Length: 166
Image (cartoon, rainbow, N blue to C red; front, side):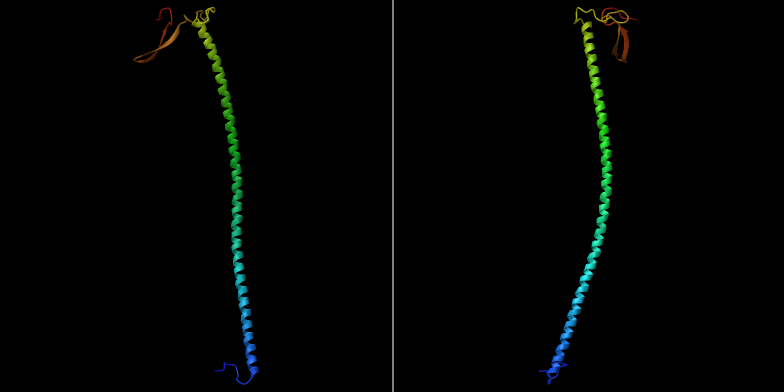
């Protein structure tokens, strides 16, 4: 068998020296491997820190946008509520006007029904209303509209007893 380089056949001291040197080389290589792993971990850690910083910056930007949009939404909400209140107020006013007109119209209908009751003899003990000219309403001249081939025309005449005017 051949003797490895650096080893001598005769002395055991040289073998121990070689083992000591080999052990020192292995320890220094293990130390270098350990340092290399530490450098790799530090590089990965630094890379992670950079990514974290970028993501944190994106997050801060997004939070700023959310804040701006929240303020804008609040302004739009207030504007909408104001417009809705205005519309509700207008609807309430229109509803009140409608109710007043219905009440007014119903009052006129009652008055007109009474008037027509007097005129048409539904109330026989009442003589009926008299116009400003002194005629009873059933003999008062009125205008009537007649439709002919040339279109509607107003014609004066008496409605009821009497003769037409010229």
